[in-house]
Image 1 (cartoon, rainbow, N blue to C red):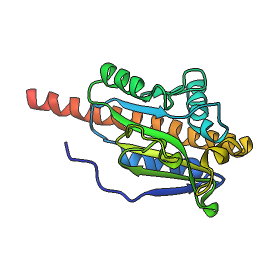
Image 2: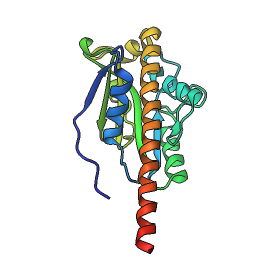
Image 3: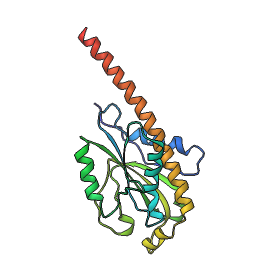
Image 4: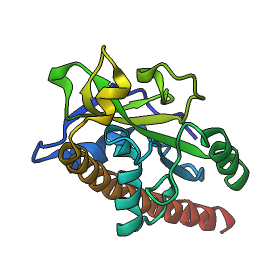
Length: 203
């Protein structure tokens, strides 16, 4: 199997009319197509802080709509956060063989970037914006900029507008849901192609 191609970071405004398609296409570009690795979506955050609730809100929306082949961790009911992150990662790597992990979290940035969804390869660094030392998560990551950085980050997260976080969470969840369907179809076709080639080799 060929290694995934290198792609540049994808940036999408959550209120872009084509946001769902851009998010799903951005994800597909990074995913290991043709692989049997389970795809794990880890939505990090807590509902005890408005800005930090982006992750578990996304997880809850995905749980409600259902996923075809991605595996989900992190919802409002069963969140993945700073206190239990190591424990949840242990569970993931125990229950799934060679998983491909997608880390999802809220982040802070410049004012002009508020509302931007970023998709990129490499691990997520949860807690970096609020100076927390937490384990890195994922082979690719999705972050949503919910507020400004640089000053009293805990206070900023706690006073982020829920309206923005909800809208961003719904949009990101829609993009992930579409990527899940696209990946399931591509995986099915690749499996069918592999089965046909195997039959031809036997003949």
